[in-house]
Image (cartoon, rainbow, N blue to C red; front, side, top):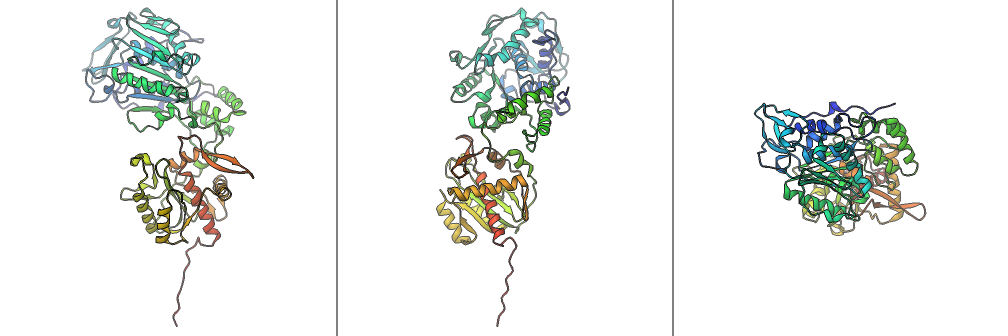
Length: 544
C-alpha cells in the first residue's frame, strides 16, 4: 500500500506564532470518528504548518489588538480530497470558540495558561517561554461555518460535534443540529445558501468551506463579502478551505488566490506543471507531491478513484485529486506541454527576432511577444526598470497606456534586429499605421486575427511545434513567462465549420491576451524562415 509522503522537512517556522493554539487543539480535540474515535489527535505536518501561519503574530503587536495583531488577516487552504481539511477546519473552529486565539502580549518567561481559569476543568496547562506571544480566549465567540449546502457544511460540522462529544469541551459546549452553544453567550452557527437570514450578524470567526464553488450565481460571493465586513467590525478573521476550482466559474477561491494582498496566507501545494495528469506515471508523481504531509492517505486508493473519474470528467479528477485549477472543457493547448518547453535564457542585443502584437483599449490586456530565429520565444522588457511588455489596463486607471506601448516598440526596434512584426490592428489602427511609416511595411505587417482560416493555421503551427518540440530548423522553447502561461491555460478552442476552430476564453473574466501575440510571433517566424530571411543578408555596392 503506497502512502503519501511526510512533508515535515519542508515546513520551517522562523516567526513568532501562538504555539499554544496547536498544543491546545491536540489536548482538546480528539479523533472524531473511525477506529480511533476519541483518541488523542495529532496534527499532520501540513495542518500544523497552516495553523501556525494563521496564528502568526506581528513582532510589533500590542495587547488590545485583535486581527491587526496577526500577520495574516485571513487564510486560504487549497488541498485535494481526503487530506483531512474538514476535521482540521473543525479543530481551528473549536479553538476560535474556546481556545487561546486572541493575542495577549509577550511572555517574559514562565507565565502559565491554565484551562481551569477559563471554564475548562480538564487540567491542561501551558507554560510560555521568554519572548513567546501569549493567547487568551474570545469572551463571546460568535462563529459561522458556511458552505453551499447542508451536506457540504457537515464536512466540518460533523467532526466538530464528535470532537465536542468525545472530548473535554462537552462540559461547556452544547451541540445541536444547526448550532453549538459555547458557554452562556457564544455560539457556532452553520449557514448555507438557503439560510441567508443569519448573515449580517457581527462575528469573530468564519470558516468558509469549498469556496471554489462560491460565485455570484449562487449568491455566495455576497456571503463572503458580507462575512468579511462583519469580521472587520469585530476584529475577527476568516479561513477558506477548498479543492482546486474551475477557472471558468470565477469563484471566490479564485479571487482570493489572485489577490495581491500580502495579508492573506495561501497554502496550495502543486506539482510541476510539466507533469501531465492524463499520464498515469505522472499522475502518481503529482499525487505524491500534493498529498505530502497526509500520511494517512493511501495513494493506490486515490489513483483508483482518480482513474475512474478520468474516464468521464478528466478536469474534475485533476481538480479533486491533482489539486490543480483546470476548466471543465478541454484546453486549446495542454499546459503541461507548454510548461515543458520552458528554458529561460538571455537574448543579446541585436539578436535577429520577430515580434507579435495584440492590443486592447480598456478591458483586455495588451502584449508583445518576441521569438528568435531558432524558436526561442520570450516577453521582452522595456524602460529603465525593465518592465515586461504586457499591460493590464486595470494597473493604469482602466486604459492601456498607449505612450508606453509606443516607447516599448521603439526600444525593441532599436535593441534587436527585428525582421518582422505581426500586429493585430483592431483598436490600434492609427498606432500600427505609425509603426509602418517608421519601420517600413516589410517589417510591420497588419495581421488580422479575425480571419478564421489563417488564424486556425497559425494556432495549429504553434500548438504542433510546442507538442513536438522541434520543426524544421527550429526547436521551440520559451521564457516561462507566468502571465503567458496563465493566458494559454485559459484559452479554449471553439469549433467552426471545416474542422477549424477559433480561440475563446474559459469564462468572460479570464484573459487570453498574451496567447495571441505568442501565436503571431511564431507565425511571423515561420513566414520569415520560408522567405529565406532568417539569416542576415549582406549587400555590396561596386562603384564604376
